[in-house]
Length: 213
Image 1: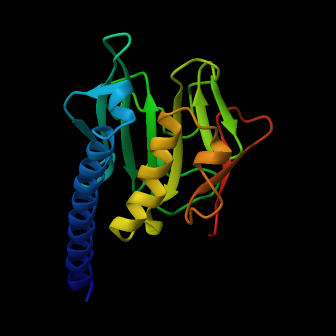
Image 2 (image 1 turned 180 degrees about the vertical axis):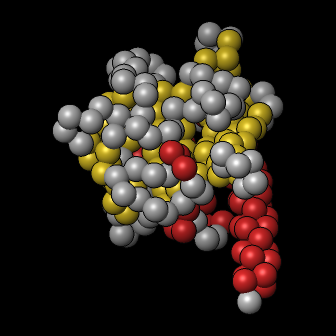
């Protein structure tokens, strides 16, 4: 029985990996499509996707995947931001405030290309310059700087269809890139949105709860 359970576990991990690869492809396609539409195309141009992975300490399983897309700010003519996402199935990318569910982090920040080593979304956050807005949006560095660096999180189990991707990832992403505040971009009807609260005396650490639509 033990042998069959081990084999079943590996079959399950392989199936999860296929689902993550499929979702990653959909997210990249939908983000690229959004960036090629006006009005975002008037502000930004894009380069090519980059990606990276993080593995467990044993090296046997992949715990996180990250992809980002360099954005050229047209009025500056240089790469100024990296737009992307991080899927965290285990480890510091999802273990926040007692959470044990896989998470999808959507971000736009100044570091890149994609590297798990340099990812800001590992808890406790080490940036020390993050500012939490409306419990759902991390703004890194100077929140008044234009354009901003930011990140928000969706429970991975809340992304099941292409409509979920467009409503919960693409629509708020577009709004944030155009400068909308958290309360307008991350609305209460986004089921699966993660709400964070800072923990007193523990910089960079937060409690996390799922917002029900």
